[in-house]
Length: 121
Image (cartoon, rainbow, N blue to C red):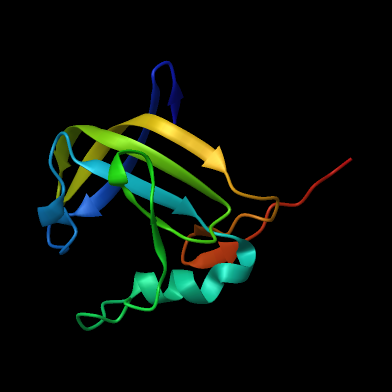
């Protein structure tokens, strides 16, 4: 994540269904899940049938980006640039808003496993 300007990036496979929804200028919403929302994270990680997420509450964020209700925090951004890289694309996004909903422990996923942050004094 860049601080000046506030910018983040993510990568998406060009073969994914999500890829066709992204273009420069697209508004995206990122929901930061709590460690206790692992089941929800697992649901979104799988391909499912149309309508499988109808029970998941969505809230409209800034610029009407879809955000998950009950998440620890939300980030809204606009796709500034899409850079092809192999069979993926790197989406560079300018952050338009970010806020925290509550205290909690963020859900982290890296190298095909969930992790947690540990505080040290």
